[in-house]
Length: 157
Image (cartoon, rainbow, N blue to C red; front, side, top):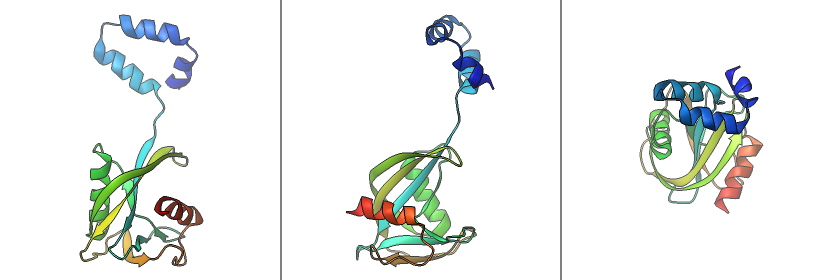
């Protein structure tokens, strides 16, 4: 509600008030409360030495197969993605680049999509991931969402 109220105040007035308000903690608290909130997701398209894409079988999804990912927890994006993959699979990954950033909804979020490679290791199932597979581009398992197929193909071309 505070964000809606603040957005009705002319921008020049907001800048003036911010500049001349002496209490930094109060100022920062008001700015924080007035801003819209969103999550940041980190996702990865990782390949093995044969060029096959790592997919994870999620236990909680209707379409269970998908690329690795998760939510950032006040950490660097690359560290968050490596942590998520390690926690969910026991595997280590090397991130080579940030391939794309996009806005998504439900929930409101920014998706940071990285590419890289899987470091050979042993898969360990978790509460979220029951299985993994490595697939050639276009040879997808049943249950991989269409938008992820398109994303993988786009970023690996």
